[in-house]
Amino acid sequence: DTLVSGVSSLEEARPGDLAYVEGDRFLKSALGSKATAFVAARHHPDLARPQVVVPNPKYTFACIVQRFFTSPYYARGVAEQGARGTGLEIGPEPSIWPFVTLGERVRIGARVTLYPGVFLGDDAEVGDDSILYPNVTVMNRCTIGSRVTIHSGTVIGSDGFGYVQHEGRHHKIPQLGTVVIEDDVELGANVTVDRATFGRTLVKRGTKVDNLVQIAHNVTIGENSILVAQVGIAGSTTLGDYVVVGGQAGLADHLVIGDRVMIGARSGVHRSLAGDQIVSGVPAMPHEIAIKAQAIISRLPDLRQQVRDLEQRVRTIESRTQRGHKRPRSRK
Image (tube, rainbow, N blue to C red):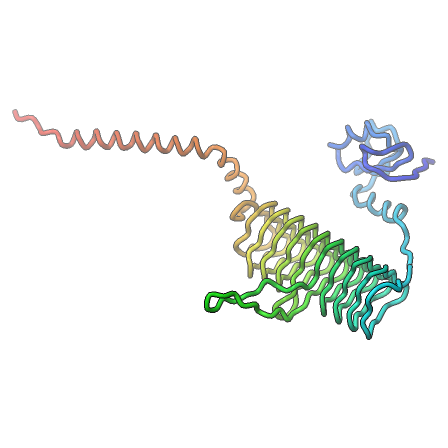
């Protein structure tokens, strides 16, 4: 039997560690690794150490880490220091740290962890087994589902960016809606999910959002979608299920993005997209076309000069042709 006492990456592993080999291109790193055993998609004969062969080594490795190398939940109770409204409902085995602010009629499920600096506004709700890290803000009437993780600095339910211009001034449109974050969602640090003007802004079950993402008022994000860092989604846009949006991509307002669409990093999406396609570029276009367009950009100065040269040659030929037509015919 082989004894494993820790987990690590291939590069940083020490004797006694378990690491995973995601594909054949990582075999060289595995051969040089000090790990005692590996999780791999296929058996590697050159890797003369124990191997656990599974179809999806990265997923299996994550399950192993979750099962054996993460700290179990510890209910520390409700700290005395902190502001509390009336009509609170707190489920069993809470872990509410000092300096948490709870508004009126807040409802908190079982085994919820609220770290210092968390603010829950009036009538806010947090479901079972959710974790809100330091300085998370959940404004009035917003709902957080079960098994949700929200990282530090994120704000749920700030006012949507809604104004109307009248007589040369911008007048605020009251934002009266809410935000609903469904079960099994994870929101990174400094994410902003704006309150709907009316109705709700919705992030559906299983979606994962990276740091510094802006989700505007009345947006709907479908189930099991991925939003990478610094994505911006304008108001009333709807994303389907299993959508992937690359970093720093921007989506205009009132769009409908179909299921299983992949949007490349730094793309600019200004129109709705049917499902099951990959787009990239500014404006967003089919990925295979965007790659070709990108390849041409560095050649544009030379192509421009070539076009100018051709134009000059055409003008010269036309001028000669016109002079030839004007010559008088000789008389016999």
